[in-house]
Length: 113
Image (cartoon, rainbow, N blue to C red; front, top):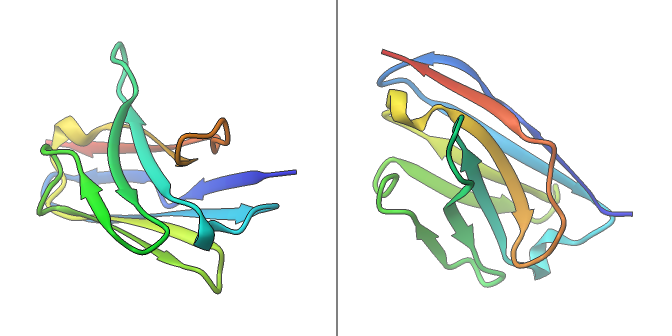
């Protein structure tokens, strides 16, 4: 049974930082591409960042230069380091095994102005 558990969300002031974690069980993250998505109230879920099985990364234009996706295969965990946070980054953040139906439960990120 595949489980993805996100953590690390919270309330932060604009300009601050947070690091989200996505711990997996039942699946080896190292051989899968992984993604972080986010969904703000009243908006569609959007792709934020992707890390390929080989370590290549891609980011939404809105977070380029501020967010960094990484993975620790030994810990079977994917991270999203978020710096210079803005109020518009407020959303529930989800991790996903890329192009699969495996999703975490989400973690709330709230950025105050």
